[in-house]
Image (cartoon, rainbow, N blue to C red; front, side, top):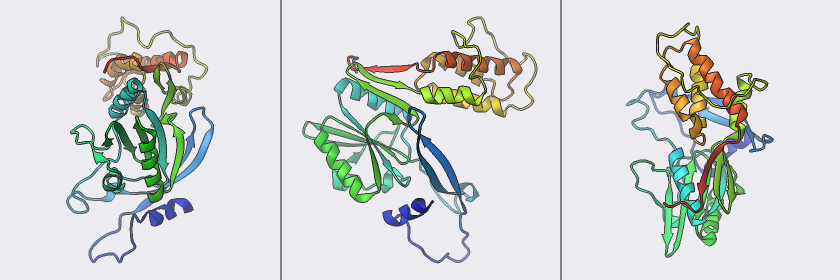
Length: 294
């Protein structure tokens, strides 16, 4: 908590001023989280001081919002290119969550924002044959490029501006486990998958060989309505995130997501079947081949 309070002061994020007349202070609260490594061991205990943004009124307290996160589609595309081009991949962590627009990358490092209507968070640098990309996801930073000297220069600059942790070669990012090899980049969510199975009490359940029976047919009139749909919606949300590296469950998850408004017991049972399939195949993922054509 002390480190969390000190970080904004060290980074010059804000200055203390008197509250203007007729203005109200946005409240805040502490959020605590245990960060884990890809092997399930504890990496560190983390404290975050977050603003209660839900108390604000649009047009009165703010006029626009931004999301300091890169899309997972962008990450997968970048890693696919990195696999075919044999790029270097490194991961950094900023001690204090930052917006990409708070990180002064452009003038000092020659990095310019990638002007894409799909995602504004990547930054790119081209110098001769050297190409480097920086991807920002809240306080996680991915550095990718074909020149180690350019990457080291960007690292050095960022270290001079912020308190950073350098995790070295990319292994675990955004909940995705990344394995680099000459054959390509393998992405999986093994730990996340096992956590879901454990959370829903299916650690000792009998596994199944496929996520959904091919003869299954679902509609709104089937069976008994669930008394509380919260657990169903939460499970479907977890499974949706798992489809980032598990296209094998995508059809089943999308089918059951159509009934999130008024799920029935038959839909809940089908969702648990997906979990039993995941229990049998926790390490499945996708391979971004180094020999594939762009």
